[in-house]
Structures are given as C-alpha cells and as structure tokens.
Length: 412
Ligand code: ATP
Ligand code: MG
Image (cartoon, rainbow, N blue to C red; front, side, top):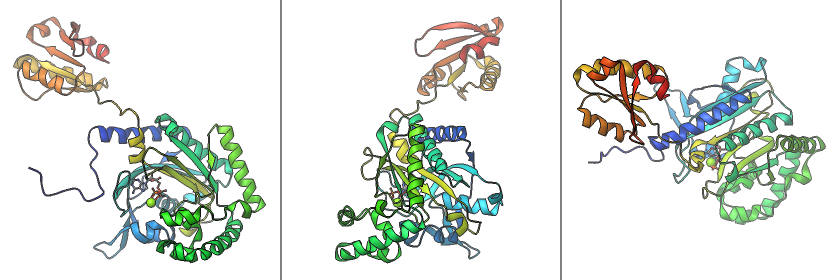
C-alpha cells in the first residue's frame, strides 16, 4: 500500500547503504581538509536572496533558472542556498573575520537548485566545500587543489577522474579576451542557442561553458585566452602549475574551463570523470577575488572548490560495510537485568551492542542473525552464577565462556 505522498521531484532519502556512502564521503573529506588546516563552518541553508543574486552573476544558470526563492511570512526575500561560497563570504563579513585572514573553511551540507532531475543531478543535492580566503598567492590555489586531490585519493576515486585546469587571467586579460570572443561569437550569431545569445552581450565567457550541442561546435573553434594573458596573469598561471607539479597532482590543461559563476578570475579547474555520463564534473572551483567585496567587505582574494557528494558516492568502488553489532541474548527473565548491565558496559567501551526488546532464545538468536551481528553474548542463570557469559562467534559458530569482566576487551 504505497502512500500518495511522494518525496518532491529531484529529492531523495538517504537510508542504509546510500547514507553510508554519503557519510563516508563527508567523513573522509572533513578529515583530510583538517590536515590542511581547514576549519568547519556551518552557515544557514537559506539566506537573503541578494547574497546570491548580487554575486553569482545575473546571467548564470543558477540565478536565471535554478534558484529556490520565496517570500517568507514577514515579506523577506529568501533563497535556499544553491551553493556554499556566497554564504561563507557573507558570514566572513558579518562576523568581522575580514580582519583575521587567512580563513580556511570546510563545509558540507545540502544545496538546492531547480534543475531537470536525472542521474547525478537533483534539486536537493549535497556538497563538500573548501574555501581559502585571504591569500592572493598561486600557492593557495595549488594547496586547495591538492587538498581536493587528496580527498579523491582517500576515497579511492582519483583514478577515475582527471583534473583539468585553466586560467581566466586578470581583469585586463579578460577584457581583451572578452572583446575577441564577442567578435568571434557575433560572426556565429545565427547558430547560437537563445541562452548564449543573451550571454553574448553580458558575459560571453560563459558561452564556453554551454552544454548546448550546437554551441559546443562553435565553441570548439573559439579563440582561447592564452593569446590575451598579461604578463602577470601568465606568470601566476605558470606558478600554479609549478606548485601542482611539486605537490604531485597530475593535471591536463583545458582552455574551455570557465566555471558557471561570475566571480571567478585566474584559476579555474574541474575534476571530471567519464564514469557518470553527462554529469561528469565531480569537483569544480577556482579563484574568486571579487566576491567578498561584492558582499560588502574589503577587497579580499580567495580560492575554493565544491564537490557533489552524490556524484562522489556513486563513484565509490566498494560501499562502506554495514556495521556488525554484538547481540546480547539473555536466557530467561532473571538474566535480563545482568544482560542489560553487560549491554551498557559494551556500549561504553565503544562497541556497537544491541539487545532485542522481547522474545525467547530462538527468536533472539534469529534477530541477531538478521541484524548481521558478528557475535552473540548469551547469558543464563548458570553463567551468572559462574561470573561468565557464552560468547558465540556468529560467523564460525564457535562458542566459549568468557569472564564478565573480560567481555569488552574480548569483543573489541
Ligand atoms: P554542472 O555543470 O554539472 O551543472 P555546475 O557547474 O553547476 O555543475 P557547481 O556549481 O560548480 O556545478 O557545483 C560543484 C559540484 O556540485 C558539481 O561539480 C557537481 O558535482 C555538484 N552539483 C552541482 N549541481 C548539482 C545537482 N543539481 N545535483 C547533484 N550534484 C550537483
Ligand atoms: Mg549546473
């Protein structure tokens, strides 16, 4: 009897193996990011709409088509966060942290975009996110990328991904490049998609990122930024590559990587895979030196990335194994009190231990097998009298009497 209440389109429940995969990605990322000195922040999942509309760029897909925006009961314009960076920069400014730089931030949580749901693309999805705010050095970009690479390695998915890097240059390089792109795309105006025609005036770089097949054919022959880089911008990019080599992070240069959001300059990068069909980008980021200022703070250099947890979770070769508890099994009512003592001793020793809420010996043993218990601690009146419990290895069937005081040590 299925209920007529279904989850909203593009959302999913995380239960069992799905949740274990998901949590494994977060735990691994959190731990590796900590070794790089990133501290975890948690910012609200909804913000004043302007936090995103002002900063992500008025021609970005996210702002034009994907935001979950609404007016709350007090009449405030609210948006469910479509990404983490803008909220983190807002928090940096609100909390006066622009005076204590650099800040190295890790965060993980749900994001919301009104997209057409498909494999690897949802309306509520989750990201891990790393931001280094306050360093203008290419070493910062390299460190942030190396951290991402280490996370992919620790997850065992690095072999499935390729790092593609590009530079968007400084403002001057981009202005010259922009003019060249407008010239080129204007000559192909009649073949461009409607979206790209709109981008042509406001942000022609974004056309390079188009997913439209027709656009992509035109983009293939578009000029690249290499010929327009100022000397300092070229030097910045060269130093990034030297640092990546030093960190041992393999990469491929791809002049088409521009990233979807407006606030990027210099470094842009993506970790891509061929294993997830059209949703091939697992991690993407770059340098966004203008964002904190747009949020009302002082000019502040910054670089970071975000990765989709669902896409990473799908790439994990072996799902994290289901936990194997210890089942405590009292034989007869009188033994239940002692069994409860044992249960708590095991739990306080850090052992996952469970006792069925009712049932005879047979029922309780059946349940122990059903929950995948690795061992059963069976205890009856005779055992209590002798100060022992019977520990049964449920994989091998072997059983032995163990002194109550030694149980936790034996089962750990
Ligand atoms: P795409 O090109 O796939 O739309 P994007 O450029 O919009 O990605 P970002 O805004 O850079 O993505 O977000 C970083 C990462 O978050 C992506 O690389 C992807 O792994 C993940 N991601 C983005 N949108 C979704 C979504 N709707 N569902 C699941 N994961 C997503
Ligand atoms: Mg997108």
